[in-house]
Length: 244
Ligand SMILES: Nc1ncnc2c1ncn2[C@@H]1O[C@H](COP(=O)(O)OP(=O)(O)O)[C@@H](O)[C@H]1O
Ligand SMILES: [Mg+2]
Image (cartoon, rainbow, N blue to C red; front, side, top):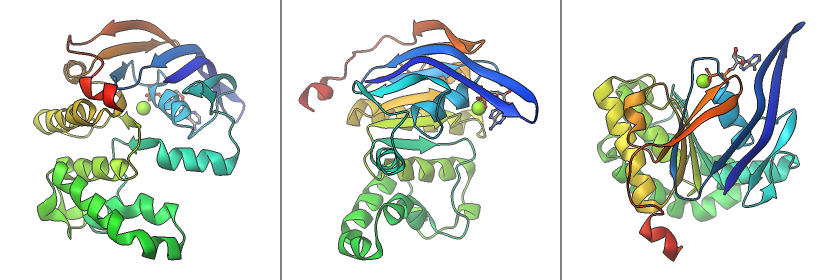
């Protein structure tokens, strides 16, 4: 479904070249929960950015359903980011001035003109409230991010990432800032979304324990994938996917 083909990426800072990806290949299957592990600085975030069209490779291609997406013109790329991908980060990236409900609604504000927003706002609100119920935050709608625990902030960020009903969730160390128990909660939440709703997930993590909640793990060393192994045996593809 989502394929990285021979990806190369080098950052240039002043006169220094930092080669990060050196011909990386990866195929993400529809409906799977994939984890990506590797040492700090091995290029995991870079890979996630390229998969999600947040950045472009120097060479190689990214394909979604067989169609090239790494070189789309601005408008098409923005639409793809908004509709196809949901992003979750280690530090949540919630807006401090907005309450939880408005943070979750942010992708809808961004994706609409003022008029378009007023026409569809009750539908978006209903969707946001449903997601906040799903992540267990119904009692925190009017709270600002600073009034929440780390786990609650990340749950709000998960709800925000799901608002536009993305097919692919890209999660960059979503538990990296949480204690083990809270991190486990977030990963269970992601796993439920994957199993129940068929959302495809690519999760970067340092934590080898949470990898066991995923279907497959790839390891990055030297800018390529060096290991590709099943993580836990469980029915795949998910039976519900057949109906989609
Ligand atoms: N925008 C950037 N400019 C310059 N160097 C960068 C940039 N982003 C990442 N790097 C460097 O690229 C390497 C890989 O970074 P990253 O993909 O963030 O690794 P990881 O997520 O595995 O820790 C690191 O050495 C990092 O310092
Ligand atoms: Mg990183």
